[in-house]
Image (tube, rainbow, N blue to C red; front, side, top):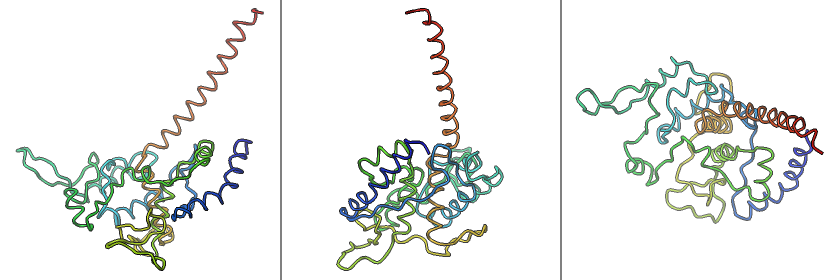
Length: 275
């Protein structure tokens, strides 16, 4: 363990109580941090977890939430859920997308690998009408868009530790945060109590329960596990080329170190006779 990492961890431990107390003052607890395989500069997505998360999305979330920035071909790309092209094409064929025929008439056809996940509703008005007046957010980048405030000096510590998993932590906590409202708390009409949602009133009812989605790999079929799997899948959906980015970033750092060394020895060689 380097001295920089040790200092960062020491500061994090000493400030944990302060951060929790600050969150309680605002009435919203801090989502508990989870262990993610993709965290850190060398982290990678767990293919089995991504496949489970996709199953949760397809069977539970896709009926309300779109994911229209993710293409079906992404399912078969390196660093993703590990589907073959044939498997990804079979997934795509289960969806219908709008297209034009040779005469310019609007038709519906089975989706292809080049297509993007279609919206479950024809437009925002239809989505709002089917969900109590609230349009369900698109899931393409929700793992990056949804987060929580860590405050000073946590954001400085995050720079050192490269902590970027606030979004997945929040998604997991949200799915596990449904409970009965405390005595005296007044829910607005159509609201559902969730201790991790700002204001504690969320329009979405509890979307998933234990045993709702069947796993074939023996993983626990609990809300806690479902939350971890869908959060990991949405983290991948928000950045499907994360593994390539990390690999290129590491290569660039190695190049810069070597280049800096060459520049140093070149300077020493060129200016060695100058006093």
